[in-house]
Picture 1 (cartoon, helix red, strand yellow):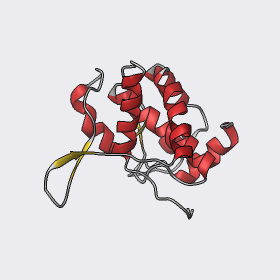
Picture 2: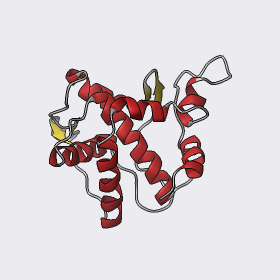
Picture 3: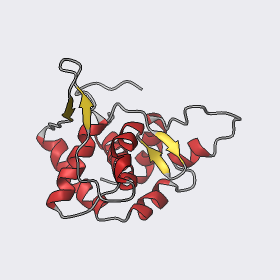
Length: 168
């Protein structure tokens, strides 16, 4: 699938956007929660803008879709509220720096409204939604073949599924 136009964003920057909105809204977000929220933002964005929000690989794990970068970045918080922000290693300085985001106006309005919706949902509800029978996680996790080493959930599968089910 080829996408024309603006590039996709770093998954850590999107997570920081979610955490910033959650802080303003006074909502706690855990590692499990952030992974599901970012997954659904990506799915909604893919359908609405016909291009991926993120460049990161989405993996099918036991509790649903996971971004390995986010899991690693926030695992120290366990099931507790994430109070820090995602960082990456700056290749020029060798220092860890906060992942920043900058959206155009349409993207920001779209994403902020969705973040408010998803942070209000309990993580378990998002896990249940991500595990829906026949959905992208289910098709990847419960595949027919003997192996799927990467357990990658493809953008094509996400767009095909959510394009039929998401209404904007």
